[in-house]
Structures are given as structure tokens and as C-alpha cells.
Length: 310
Image (cartoon, rainbow, N blue to C red):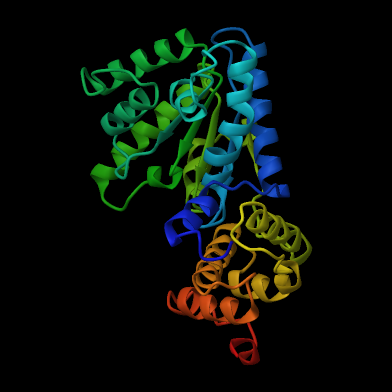
């Protein structure tokens, strides 16, 4: 019933809901392909890589954190009997070794990168030893765990900076990245479009596949928000469907086809409508959410006609 869900509850739902869309499907298929290749090659054989580069709020992180790991890796781990039945999904995500996730450090020096790599592998004493010694330890652990994929997030952090010292440090890290792939560690680079410069410097084009993660078209966006509409009713936030797909052209303009931005706007509209005890999201809630979110952040103009505010 409207009004029974707090703003925090609705926010949590939107963070965790998974609505399939073509960009996420392509990303997951590529991740699975990299894993299968790792399973087939002999130890030490050069691995493959892929890159997913898109603007902030495009939905790339959500694709892996809330879709790929819970809906593909967790069921696989359960089917293989790797965890007891009473181990919860979020614990499996944290403890599984099939897909290792790490975040590139803000500064691209090798010591921080090696520590982040060991941290992703849940290794103790990740700052112990020289950077190259830590990397060797990481290689051994990756193979011992029979890990199949490394997702390297914030890859744009590895771009060479202006001064000579940081440029040299970034060069060392980039050399190590190339070595990781050559030694059989498949890497999925995830980051902002600026990471393209890093990957170009690595000269990995012949062994790296690019995952296209462009903004959704109007029709794709309509399918996506129709899925959210169904979830809003299924979870009891509203009694009636809001016919959100009808607003796809406006949302395409205001949110520029970006999944994360669209989801945020609908979340704010849902919070407002629920707090007012409405049976569904109405145009006035969308108009107000666009003003309070898109316009306030100077992301875009309010795409909804003023009459919608009434």
C-alpha cells in the first residue's frame, strides 16, 4: 500500500532490482566468454581481455554487482556444491573465487596496484614485500584459487598523469597489466571513457574485445522502465501500474538514455508519490523529480511539459 514504504526502503529496492536490458546482456555474455576461455587454456597461456567504458550512472557497475554475481555466479557455485545450503547469497558473492573484483587505486603507482590486486584476492599482508614480489604472490594465489576472471574497476585511474614521476609509475603499472594477461589472467576493464587511452597505451587491441554500453534507445528505455513499473506494483509500493513506458521519449531526452540516471529519477518520483499516498506515479511526480534531480545537478533541462506539474 502506498505510504507503507519509507524513502530508505524504496531507495534500497531501486539499488537491488535487476531489469534486463541489451547492454547488460552483452556485458555478461562477454564475461562468461572470458571465463570459458580461461577454463580451456593451459596454465601460462595468454588470456583474453575486454573493456566496458561508459559514463558515470550508465549502469555498468550495477550490471556486475547486482546482476552478474547474484544471478549467474551464485547459482553456479550452489550447483557445484561449493557452499553449504545455509550460506546466504551475499556471503557467497564475498567468498567465491571464480570472479575476482578489484578497484584501480586513485594514483597509478605499482605498489598501490599490487596491494589492490592482493586485496581483491583476499590475501593477508597485502602491503608486505616489494611491489613486484606482491604481484608474484598474487599470480600464485589467482592460479591456486582457480580464478577465472579479474574485473578491474575504475580503470581510468591508470591513465598516465602530467608530471614525470607519475608518468613513470603509471608506465610500470601498465607493463604489469600487460604481463598479467600474458601470464593467463583474463581482465575485464571497467571504467570511464578516459580509460581508452590506457588500453591504447597497453597495445592490447588485438586481444581485447570492447563491450558497447551506449545509452538505450527510446524503445529499449521503454522496455526498461516498464520493468520498473511492474516491480513497483509487485513489491507493493503502488497499487496500480503507472504506465511509465509512455514517458520514455521524455526520459530519453532528460536522462540521455543512461540507465542509472533514469533509475534515479524514477526512484525520486516513486518516493514522492508513495509519501503522498498515491496509488501510482503521476506526471507531476516525474516533473518534480526532474526539477529536483536533473535540473539541480545541471545534468539537463526538465523534459516534461509544464502542464505535467499540475
